[in-house]
Length: 482
Image 1: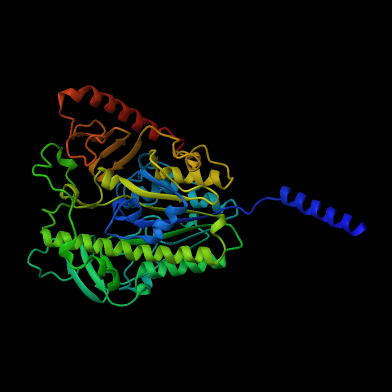
Image 2 (image 1 turned 90 degrees about the horizontal axis):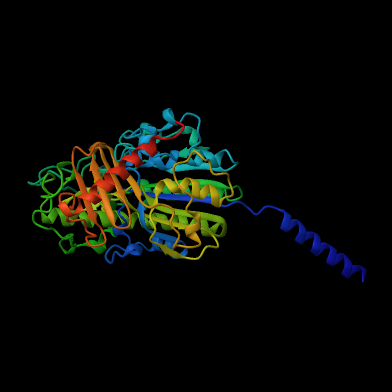
């Protein structure tokens, strides 16, 4: 009787302490690719480029189909989601760090660091030049290259040098090389390199390896770990085996091309890289698609390395996993290439959020990358700073029918372009007074965004409505405590 009583008391005591004690906080694993269009992922419907490791995250989490970046190239986008402010709020419209404007206000990872999390990044989270900041022609400087990084955001930070366009293998410059005489070159240039050697020769392989090591080292303490992969940013360089599914290059398909496609859009709406100004014929365009897909496949394999480390260390059930990109990318749509434009291919991003215990889902509501900071703070039981310009979208992870915003907002600073994207229309204006032109697309009838309705007299009331909405939005993004 006495023994039974002691057992019962012990059980009750254990249960009481378990009920009163705090559960282990969620970790945050933030995985970001560079220059990745959602259309290249098999979980978003691509039937040619297979991305099984990213698909596996989507199978456990919520896949957002209408997520938008706040800047359509690296610098302003990354500064925005890390600082918690729109680019025009901080004035971070280029490749610089937002710290001078935000002062001592905590960035996303810094907020977690200040709440007793180990906060680290591996490779590119804030802006870092690719390939210039990655290649190891000067090993010493590459090891210490931090780009527009913010030291206060991290407990530790690590870079991942790699050979980039200088990798041994078969390389070809596709851009501005019509006679084929130009060798593989560096810079922001379309170059394909079928590389010799294995995954660890290159930056992303080293990033995955280091991230896996950090997961193992810090599994007993809450962590916010940023894993920044640089592929598929040019140069399109990956080990040879990743090219095999996309060879011969001639079999790769290009998007629909329509004669006179640019006739109804203002000059700033024509992207900075086009098939014409890059002097890329059909062969080169198809090779660019194959090189891009090979780079995506290589990056996906590195995502697998990181996710395996999470599983091997028993952390799947208490780690929030986010996969995204800093912005989208054109692969020949409208004869445009690369980023910067405000069309969906460039302003839209893949976004997958996997939270332990939440059911898998697909969410078609509009969200912004700016929403990740407040959402993860909320999910981890931290106070959500009231100053943040993003929104908490955690309710969508329980009910994907929830909505938090009527429209997504994005900017293309080098074009002075602004986007409001809602359920029916994509409205783009160039110049804060729209003096440099307007685009209006009914995305329900014209998802490819081929017909600009801004000049149609029947749509003038709608144009006027969105001009006023944009005026209000521009005023609101500056209405903060900075």
